Structure formats: structure tokens, C-alpha cells
Length: 280
Picture 1 (cartoon, rainbow, N blue to C red):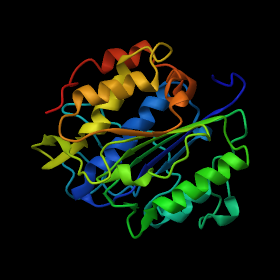
Picture 2: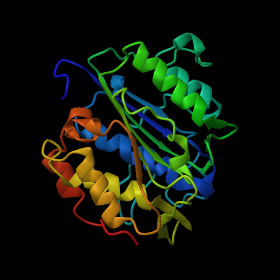
Picture 3: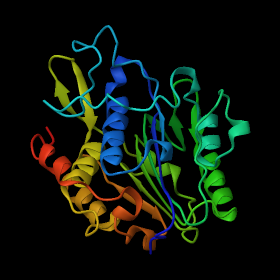
């Protein structure tokens, strides 16, 4: 199903700011390290995060961000594509569809995808019914679906996969068509809340959430040529007990090997990920 000559694009978005929401930016930094180690070049990765926790006055280890107990520092090398006040739903949608003119930022990095390319999007934030929180505003479900439909119509991708972690995230994709080669996985049903994990005593904050901890560990520990998004969904269903993961859109895309979107996990990453894999 993959387009062998196409590019693999990645968009990683943390929709929150402040120390109290540490885990969203930690999630995005960890996700960046995974896709970077898997061979995706930085010019095909777009990162949006407020960037106010690595050197926050509450951080006992300045310049250090971890995403699991005793885990590695996932902050080094993370691109600063959109930070601070540039983390907005308007910039997210414009960057996603490659509309530089609509981005309210000088010299913006955007996804310039074409018809043979794949796009993997990961968003982690707070959420309410039909909307996902950004630092100062909301991304609404109807605007997200409208943009995805426009991109499909304009032949901007061969396949797209979206992972969304937030409370009520299932409400964001209830109108996603099943015939435009887009597959979405959410951490909760439309009416559910999600749950954090890995409470850190030194930082006095949660390091991650159940959904993100499980999907990232699975990605790090498996041969992605041999595992599909459906396999990963089954693993999420098995391991997440506090909420109900959901999937939407084109189930045929879910049958793709994960490596079609994020290359394959190198052995060195698997070795590093063997410890601290159990949700606490």
C-alpha cells in the first residue's frame, strides 16, 4: 500500500503550556526522538510546542525533559519550528496543508507534501467536546476535518494517520470520511477523560499519559515492517484500562505497516527502550 518514492512527513503538536502540563511537551519531544532515530530527516518533521518547561524554574534538571521514569533526556535536538505564541490552531492547519502565506510567522516550516507522500500527525493536549485546546484558543473538529478533506481533494498525500491524545478526543473525528485514505486513533471516546501516568517525585508532575506511553513504547520495541497500525491499536486496547481508545476513517490505512509512515525502529533504540516500559 505504500508509495515507495514518496516522502514521509511528520507533524508533532503539544497544545498546552506551563509546568503543570509538563507531559504534553515531554510527549512531543519523545515522539520527535523516535521518528528522528528512525531516519525521518528534520526537514520532513514539523514540531509545535510552547517550549517553556526545559528551562522552567520548577525544573530540577535545567535543559532536561524526560517522558518516563529514569528515562533519557528527550529535549536535545528537538526543532523549534513553532514555539510560544506561534503555537496556534491557525498555524497548525496552515502548516499542515503547506500554506505558508496563511502562517502568522516569519519563514515558517510547512508540510509541502504531494500525492505519493504519507503524513503522520500526533497531537497531545487538553480537550473538550468537539475541540482541542491550544495555549490561547481551540482547534475545532469541523476546521480539522475541513482541512483534511481539502488536502485529500488537492492530492496532498497518499495516506494520512492521526494519533490524538486528549480528553474527549473521540469527538474530533466523528465526521471523518472513510474514503479519503485517512485513519485516526484517539485516546478516548467522545465523552471520556484521559489519564496521565508516571508521577515523578522530583519534578512533582506527571511525565506522560497512558495512551502516549503505550504507543511510543510499542513503536520503539517492535519491527515496524512487521507491525501494522491495527496491531498497535490492538495493543492499546489491551494495555489501556482507564479509557477506551477509538479509531475512525479508512480502516484499510490501518492495515499498513507502521514503517510506511515512520520507517523502522533501529536496534539501538529498541535496546534503550527495554527498561521502564510498564505504566505506573
